[in-house]
Each structure stands twice: as structure tokens, then as C-alpha cells.
Image 1 (cartoon, rainbow, N blue to C red):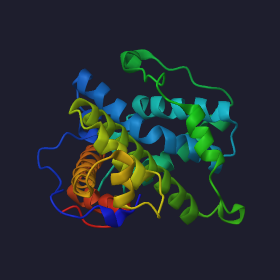
Image 2 (spheres, helix red, strand yellow):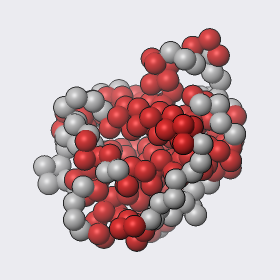
Image 3 (tube, helix red, strand yellow):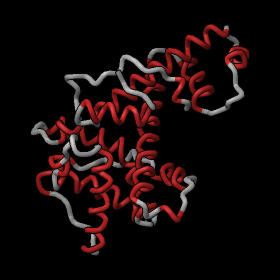
Length: 257
């Protein structure tokens, strides 16, 4: 996906946003569950792939550790300690993953979890670990740089962006189906997602039997909606306007003003 295709503007951080960081630390059980689902949805794939790479774990162990980490995050209320003025959420979570895996190694057995948070047990039934493993298998990593903190941060960042965009694409697909704009998504998928640099608007117009102007208008709408959706998802997992702007620059390459 070409970042230049998505122009900046109109994406400021909502002053009355709903943030997972606020909700997870709150007393409302329903809001906490919603916040955890949002957080898991955004981060389970990056965490899984990171455990596979950084800790060289088998697929089964990585799955277990991924689920265990999010349960640990609840049990120990790790987000209560997060300070958006000191680090990005994804960096904080990555370091928490490292600590969790090291502690699990020392314990030599999986901790039993329960007590007050049983009703917030995380549901990973929808987590497609097979697709995550396929994506990980296709990742090219320089073995000489694996131990570098910079390379690990870069890897986690790229997987976080990939996860954010994948979720936004799913949301856009659902929106197009709901609004009966399936063709707009098909055009977006063909031109922006499949990565054929030689494909032109004129070729798409002939392929779909529509005017070039309709291709132009449909793609402009789909990109605008994709950008809006991605920024809304991003705002949910940021703790401040400053973090939101920094993460928007990371994901899109420009300020979300």
C-alpha cells in the first residue's frame, strides 16, 4: 500500500476519545472487556511473531505464551503502569513481553490464572495463528541483527503497522458491504492492496466495465474511509495526542492533523 496515495488532513485526535488504556484501568467490567478485546485484536499477531523471532519458540509455545501474556497483563494490571509521556504503548508492551517470557522460563511451568478476572478471560477463538505463522515464515530477517534492540523494535513496529492496516481493511470491507459499495472495495483491493504497479485506472475501468471517473471517485472514497478507520483504530490504542501523532507518522508517514 503506497502511503502517498493517502493525503493528510482531518485526522486530529478526538478530545473525547474512547481509549483502551483508560477503559482497561477502569471499574466498568463491560468497558474493560471491550478494551481488552480491542487491545488483543491489535497486538496478538505482533506479540506472537515477536515471541517466535526474539525467543525462538515453537509455534505451540508461542501461541501459549501469547495468550498467557495478555492474561498476565490483566492479572498484574500492567497498563496501570504505562506512561504515554515516557514511551509508546507498543514499546512498553514489547518490553513487558520480554519480561513475561523470561519469568515463564524461570517458573518452568505455566501459571494458573483465575480469581477475580475469570469473567474477563480472553477469547482467542478467532485468532488465526495459522495465518500469523504463514506471515512469519515469509519474513526476511538478518540473523546477525536479531539481538539488536533497534532491529527488534523495528520488527515489532512493522508487525504492529501490518496488524493495524489489516484490521482497517477488514472494517472497510464490512463498511462497503453494508453500504452496498462492494465495487469500491474491489477497486481498492485491486489497485492499492495487490501491489500491481503497472495497473492503471483505465485498465480497471475496462475490467469492471465502468468509466474512468467512477474508478477515480470510488478509489478516492475508499482511501478516505480506510484512512478514517485506521486513524480511529489507532486513536483507541494511544494514551495521548502526542503518542497518536507519533504513531500516525510511523504508520502513514505524516501528521494526522
